[in-house]
Amino acid sequence: MDIRSLIGTILPIVIFGFSFGLYEVLFPLYMNFLNISLLDMGFTFTISALVVTVMNIFIGKRSDILGRKIFFSLALLLGGISHLTTSFSSSLIPLTILKILFDLSVAIKNAVFVPMLFDQDRKNFISTYSRMSGLEFIFQAVGLATSGFLVELLEYKITFIFSGILQILGFITFSILFTEASRNKARSRSNEKNSFFKFPRSLGILSISGLILSIGSSASHSFITPLFFSDKFALSPIAVSVLMTIHRLSLGIPLMYSDKIINRLKRFQLKIYLMLFVSIQGFFTAVSTLPHVFFVSAFLWLLHDFIGASLWLPIRSYMIQLYCREENRGEDYNLVSAISSVGSIAGPFLAGVSGTMNVNLPFQLSGIIIILSNIPLYML
Image 1 (cartoon, rainbow, N blue to C red):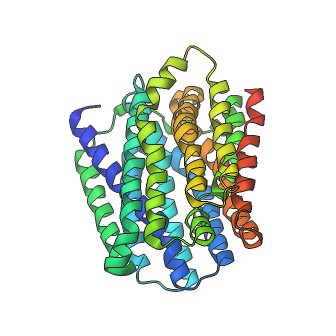
Image 2 (tube, one colour):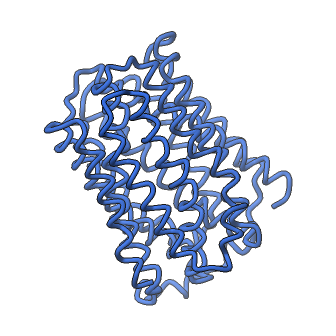
């Protein structure tokens, strides 16, 4: 990747990470501020996930023909529009529509970013992916860290507007500086016919595993994470944002260096390590609900990313890229993502329903389901 494109990628990723981190705390707290019920929040996140799942199927297929750049640019633009308009909405239906818009921007970005990196520099993909993703998560942490303070200082409206302007700037920067590798557009329209029916079996197995993993992960993330610690330990918005910041750093920092470990594992069967690190995430997610002391609970919970997700994320991404067909890379990758993301429809609903019964239940169910996601991998 040339230096111009590298800068054109890094800056938007930093901006996108910051705005996403800001939104992760800001949006559920804003809905809570408007006295929207936990169950309605669950429906909002579920409906959004459903719409995005349907759209996700088409994004990768079109990016094989049109290229990744146009879609990544669109993701930044949609995110900016969503943030700019959210602060002017105060009822459930408009907020649900804007949530869909923002989740769509995230889905588009996620759909094309990994294939784009693989196409630009496949030889060093694990290192590039780890560094870029780690940087994004670190700036998500910065967004999380500042969310509580910005709400206290500026209130919700100006905070959303500030985030929206940043994403528009990211859109402009990426559009001007990034030069797409020609092989991103390698697929011709003649290759579209019946490509779905040639979907590799290995990707099907990873898709099913990813679906189960997504149910488990989304049952303890999204809106329920800040509300779990806020309700159980009576944390203030600032305290919640600090915790969420540490949470994101516990993923971002080790992720930037995870390639050093993963590259040593390449000679062995990566599937075994994928299953191991996924199990570690599930275990620490579930047991974090047992302590009644905040610092103990938070410490255990933070380990689910530090020695779990920071290692299985690059391994899983690399394995998917290895099994993707060359001229259908975007379609294959996004079909895996689309199938997997069906789990994020059920996860928030599960969190909303179980959370109304017991504040610990979403995290406990999440841990169990995450571990169960390893079962399909035995067939890989």
